[in-house]
Amino acid sequence: MLQLTNLKLLYYICIINQYISKVVFSFNVLYNKTMKLLKQSTAAIFFALIGVFIFIIGQFFIPAIRDLFMGSKLFLIPMGIFCLLGLVLLVLALKEKAEGKIKKFLILTGASSTGFFVFVILHNAFMP
Image (tube, one colour):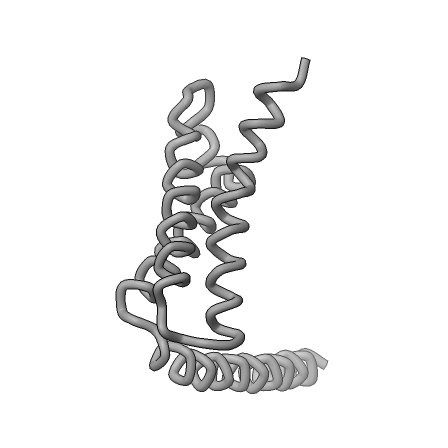
């Protein structure tokens, strides 16, 4: 009975590994097609934006990171960096020579990352 359970576990691990390899392969194909159209600075800003976003999510959901910033205004610094990176991405996307979906994607990404925290601050500033 124990070996049957180990075989099932091994089978499920193999199935999950196959799905992960398919996802990674399709991400690599998409990455190579897309990044050929972008300048290196635009791609760097985009990935920095993703990194800062993951850190901000970590501030909310990971207790070790949350405790570092508890009770201080330092938790606003990554949000400000996120907003500024979004603004830079928006400007670079407008200057970029890429056309079509990638340009629309970069504009929407930059505008949403900039606008979200701007409107959070405006909402909290004018609420009684």
